[in-house]
Amino acid sequence: MEIRKSRKEDAHSMMELEHLAWTAGTTPSEIHFDSEAEYLLKNPVGSKIVAVMDGKVVGILGYKSPIPLKTNAHVAELDIAVHPDYQRHGIGIQLMTYLKETAPTEGYQKLQLRVLSNNEKAIRFYKKNGFQIEGELKKEFLINGIYIDDIIMSYFL
View 1 (tube, one colour):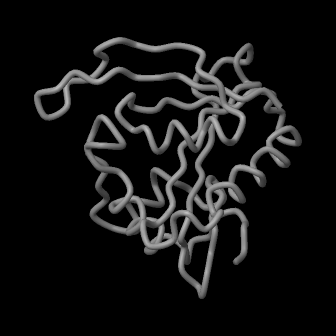
View 2 (view 1 turned 60 degrees about the vertical axis):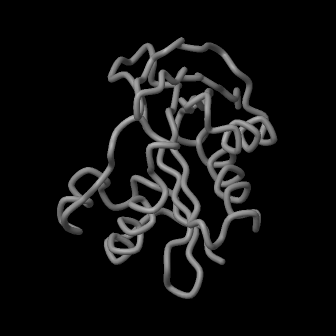
């Protein structure tokens, strides 16, 4: 397996993975791209870390500054997805390790994410990777008729 920054030729398998990963149980809004061009417009080359096996992207970790302010430039908000067929093989941990090693060289000192409170599997994964809960937004989303809290977690580099 290779862990590296995304390339143009990764767009198709990245798009397929994101369509599989982001569901009502993992995100508050539908994520869908109609074409590779549309995907690359929102996710430029090099903007994500990918795990590649046999020429196919099986894991994606995106990160960026959540607020375009100089005073917040040390914070990276992240999202991570691993193909369902490749979960529980350490891919997510390897992606996180890569980010923890490279983020400081890009000026980041804090990693932050948001996770739906009903996504217990993801919350366990983040805690296993050293993330701690910083806050909770009660009833932040109404998904399929159910109110879901939004949990904010962070990791300090």
